[in-house]
Length: 295
Image (tube, rainbow, N blue to C red):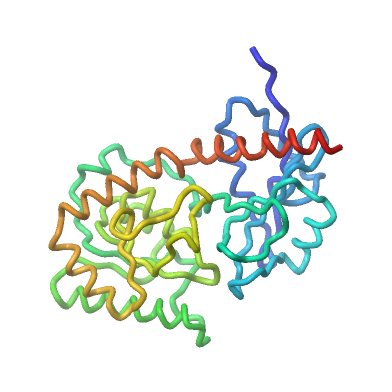
């Protein structure tokens, strides 16, 4: 039996003035070839194999949609200092001049949860959801375009309710938010401070059909995962048309069922923790070989 490769990560990093667990750690725990060691003494966001930094994780939003890399201004400096073979970036946009080796590395759910076994067949009583967890809000008291769009989406939910649909918006607990997704058919989704969101991935996990702003190949979920209009979601660039798009989609239950099946297959094959872990390890393993050759 082959000896496992020891892979070290610092499980905590600083974000927005607080500490956050490194999201890829549960993914890497799924990989049988790896002996994962959590080591708080190595640099935050670094991945170390054979005592060498082979990768750095960049989990931060591109707030200006160009090339903002910071956790207090230090992420780009860390990359330059550590010189990793690859940078695993969550928010990755095609055409941006990122540091060499930067790849679109997948976007995490806010938390890993057990899924019901009947997601393809269960009766879903909530027609449309745009719920938010209690640690978020729709109104930030500023005039960013994405904030206006989110407020608009709430009004679209109210319109659907007036038309007789079971639709949900507003703040709720994380537990209720997750539980409601299992019973929701369609989910309204719009960007936040970053273009990709936990909510979008959570919709995929639950088989909730997203109505969302266009992304296409410009904003891949992962370098090999590009959402397609009519296959994995419905693209709509105008938040004032979300209720219209949802009403049309609710009349086509076969389309909803087809997209839901595509979403759940995408989750199982590429985006669930185990699939993500093995995909990341395939990239890290190549980076390890490159680092060894050039040491």
